[in-house]
Image 1 (cartoon, rainbow, N blue to C red):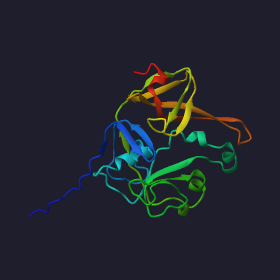
Image 2 (cartoon, rainbow, N blue to C red):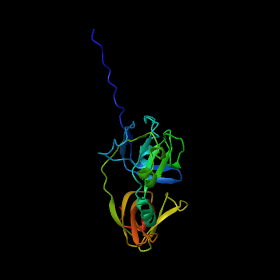
Image 3 (cartoon, helix red, strand yellow):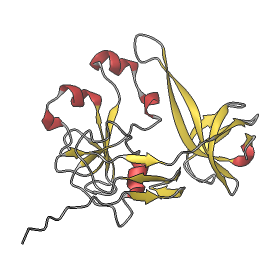
Image 4 (cartoon, helix red, strand yellow):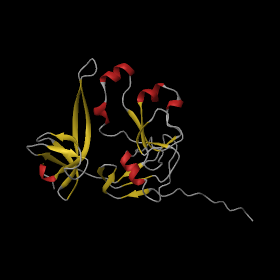
Amino acid sequence: MLPVLTLALAAPPIRVEAGVYRIDDREVWLGAYTLDAEAGPPGACDGGTLPTAEERRVAARNPSFTPSTLFEELAMPAAEPCDYSGAVLEAEGVEGWLWFAGWGAHLGEGQVMAGQNDVREGVIRIHSNPWHFWGEEAKPAPRGARCVHRDPLVASTVTVGASGVLLRHGRGAAFAALHQAPPRSQVKEWFREGGWSWIEAPRAVIDNSGSEHAIRECTVFGWVSSSSLVGSG
């Protein structure tokens, strides 16, 4: 009798539907997407897309999610470039952070941002300086990656009203403000419900820390009152 070969089938990706999700002290809106149920080796998403910390954490709540003992690569947060420093760039030659989710055996020089030792909620970052110039013992390990596949979406371009508007961490004045969009500026509206809109707004920060004046530009996501937008559907 010939031996029977059994092939291990890859777990189907985790499906997350579009909606509002609570993460720590924030509410975030996420468009629909799928995330790999299992982590692959480092660089597995070089030809694809890495998830944001929010996408990874929400998908990890699904019972079908397969936890790993890896620090999994994440996309850089959209707001991060506004935190760059000209002085750091001049002194160290590199700036910014590399982000990871989940939890491995060796934290290295990583800074814990959420969920220490938690393979589902853990988020850390490590500065580019130790990552590029220090030895492997400084880096989080072991490492891996999961790819995200987002459903196609198109945002509406709307205009902020004459009074400007505060972007908040949640749908209500009790939530902290994180940015003020100036009057009559153009923003992207991704979701609207119950008088609140999830928008994407540009942000510019003046950086005088280095020897040359610089303006850092980035993107901020948050909630605003729909009534403060002109052209909101």
